[in-house]
Structures are given as C-alpha cells and as structure tokens.
Image (cartoon, rainbow, N blue to C red; front, top):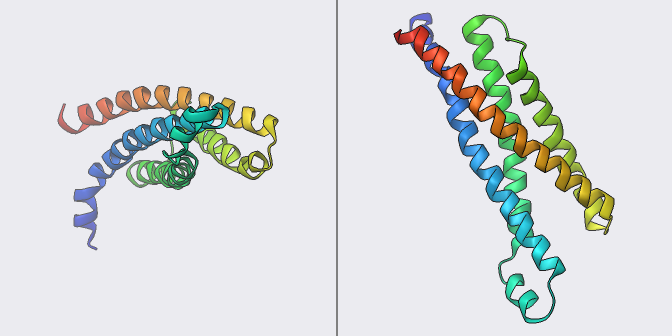
Length: 158
C-alpha cells in the first residue's frame, strides 16, 4: 500500500472504532437481557419455568458474552491502534483509562463463569456487579466518545 493511499484512509480509521463500539454497546445490553432472562428461569418454578426454559437463555447468553468479550477487546485495541497511527501517540485521559478498565472488567466477569457453573453464588453476584459497572462505564464511554468524534470532525471539516 502506498503512503498516499495510507494518508487518504488514515483520518477515516478514527470512525471505525466508535461505530463498532456503539454496536458492541447494543450487544452488551442484549447479553445483559439474556442473563436477566436466564436468572428468571433459574428462579422460576412450575409452568413458568417450563415456558422460560424454551427460550434457551443460558446458551444464548454464553454465546453473546463470548462474542462480546472478543469484540470489546479487539475494538479497544483497534481504537488505540487508530489513534496511534494517526497521532503517533495515545491520549492518556478518562476515555482511554475507562476503556482499559472495561477490558479488565469484562475479562474478569467472563473468568467467573466456571465458578458460577459449579453453583458459586459469590461468583454469580460478582459477575452481575462487574457487568453492571461495565454497562455504566460503557454508557459514559459512548457519550465521551461522541465528544471525541465531534472534535475529529471539526478538525477535518471545520
């Protein structure tokens, strides 16, 4: 790839990360919904439980969570990579630090699954708490990211 081609696409690399992360935020909320539905299934009895089991919420939650873990890590690395390619450095600030923290939260949350499968309620409640913090941070990240995108657009077109 020639340097002219790279120079032409470099500014647009900045927009792949925010678009991807908004999709990943939607997937995060969906995975949370599936986890909630599985929890309802675990706690239900009788006919209600039989009906909820048909939703196969646990399997869907695991699949969504696995995809989410991979996409969040890759999306975060991609955002840092695009920033570095375009600026020759990372901007150490709240957006970057919260994003790195989110990667730690989701990895830790996923690591609790084997313990939850063995019935460990402490692991289960920790998993739920970590994911609640993750969703809160993700919501904040989404809006702080929009502010960054606005600055990028202003520098490109303003």
